[in-house]
Image 1 (cartoon, helix red, strand yellow):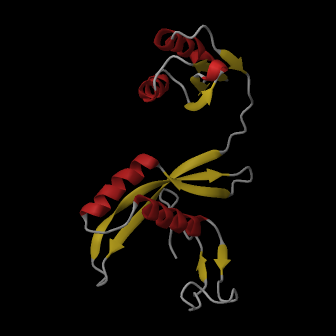
Image 2 (cartoon, one colour):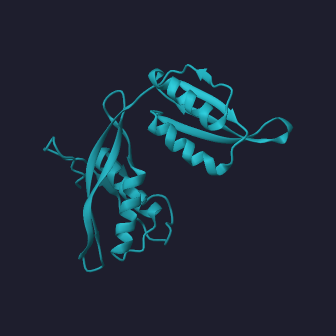
Image 3 (cartoon, helix red, strand yellow):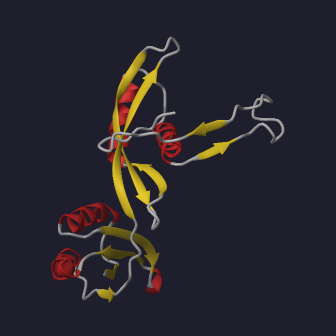
Length: 196
């Protein structure tokens, strides 16, 4: 179920508070879209994804906090995918192959209808924590670079594919890149192996 309401009497400073409180009250997700309404007034459109049993508490909270005169109920259908968390072991090493930081991070694997993995994503809070630990270890990597490295490695572990850049003409540095071929070999069902 989706609740929708438009609010034109709050400031941008109130929006994060409203999102956090709606999530605490049982919203599955909250999206807030800035918009312009009649007479050129700025407003925020709230889209609140929720279960029917949380409808009353979420609507009443919005009325209490914003003074809204009502919310719209949009009955929607959801096409869900299964997902699972798997641990990926990481090791960041220096040029002498000495470990600068080692540990694990959870990867969310989205599973398709035929039980095949579709995508791999690292959760934001874990990524943020890892980025600060990696910086403390002296590595100059941005959070974006760390995310790309982890997700690329996880995808190579769960999907069977080969990438070959040799036939594409000159590369970034006019040197051909070696082919990449990674497969998942994991005999221990309690643990995910992202091995070569």
